[in-house]
Image 1 (tube, rainbow, N blue to C red):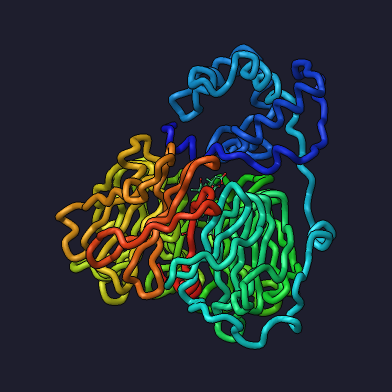
Image 2: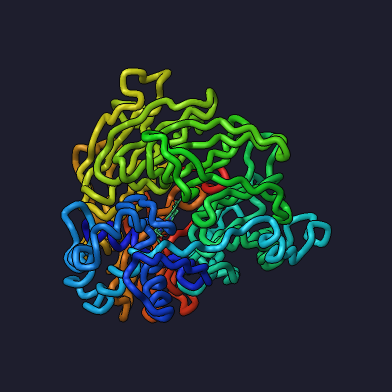
Length: 544
Ligand code: DHE
């Protein structure tokens, strides 16, 4: 496993702090309660991302007692300490765990996995708050902001988002949210913003208020990454949906209050070996523009669910087998196809939202990570959607126009060379002639602190490097990472986060898309650990 992959996957799970039932396996090596608690915490901080909450295996191997007990403590210690060529990190030799920790973890994984609590309607209702009921909200926009050009910027480590006026670059409000917000999504009308934290807390923000702020909140699980709203004609702003990692389920809510309506579990059979998986996490979700459907991507089973929400009490679901470890993705420029990364399978699945079937499974480079990907018209191949990779330096361009450019549809028509691996996000805009690629997880700071830009009309020329972190001019930025290009509404400027540690200064850097020169640096002591940023208009209309 490379350092970028490790940094990406081994993030802390909020389950580290949840109380859990401990069962004892008489055959497992002895542990005191204190040792068990310590090991459980380390497991959820370091290991659960790859091996799963129930240790049934995800991108890492299964670690249930039937597998670990026959191997025994000494054998397991070697693996944990020194890693393996198959991808296990070397936790001791890298300095992340002491010898005592290694011994503790080797004994811990021979115990039965403790079970985190379930989280259903009753628990959700207890956390559900309508702070401003719909009838008390403004009936028209009460501020002078050009709300279509507001950016919602995640302030990861403070549990907030910054709402920033894209025209004036002033901070409108810092809104309290869940812990380590993952994404923001805009309602179909553009009035509401939905924000989800890693702790599965959703905040709903009304952009019509004099000072836009929270109007409703709920917690839909114990750990989550995705939220979306209904976008099909006639259903605008009617419903919201959130997917959770734990428990493995999705929740459909009322679009104006977040009142939970239906909770649906995703436990089931895997697409390939057709075995039961107890913990299939819900990854990306988008609202279809073609039907009253949510497109729900289930990671461990490798299934894309088209959930017809026209009758929430009688949900009709089309279950499309794609490939395992579905993660992030976005629509093509026609919005008919959802392009989703099956990351550890090194594939992109193209799902046809009009006909409700798999259009193609496309082999790409190592660990594709598109964010929502980037759409543009290639001079030769016509409309393409593109993705960068965590595990290699390639950028795959995939033809997405089966009508006009049939011979190129669902094929990798070109592979661009980027600055290196560790890329997370790629972006373009219909009004732009450029394609931007970040590399925040690349081990070389020169690469992780800059972005590559391509001229779409002349891709063969290669890329230009923009030194974004240097432009930010931070005196004490420490180990900065430049993350996620995002255009403004007009498509003539591009925003980047310069993401520093919590106790260091961060910034947002705005680049002029025509000249590729620095336009502005947004600095403010309140901008702590900015990561993703979402332009209201582009998110509302799925422009990327
Ligand atoms: Fe993300 C999107 C999950 C690590 C920033 N991330 C997503 C989505 C999923 C996901 C499922 C798609 C949501 C959607 O479209 O509905 N991310 C995960 C993880 O499981 C993972 C690997 C590890 C973890 O423990 O969270 C992970 N993600 C990261 C990071 O380290 C990033 C850079 C910073 C952070 O906040 O932790 C990060 N993820 C983002 C961003 C998006 C995202 C900014 C939205 C991209 C977009 O353009 O839509």
